[in-house]
Image (cartoon, rainbow, N blue to C red; front, top):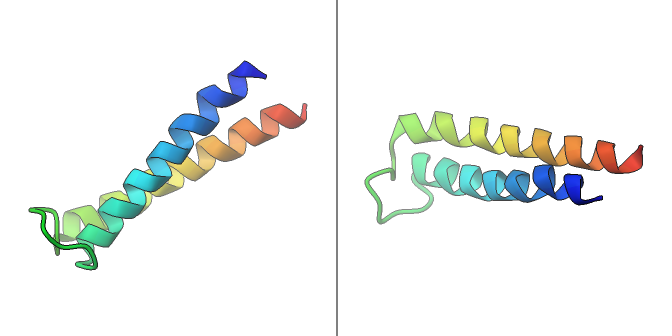
Length: 64
């Protein structure tokens, strides 16, 4: 059961970070050097997807 947290907790953190980076990259969140930058608009969703995959792996391991 503890091994689930090794995937879910980092996954949630990556989803949140990826969401913030995406919103900054597309210019929705301002006040940063990352705001309006295409680089972060690309990196953000990638990080978000990695987080979702980690959460899915954690949940799949729980069901076994």
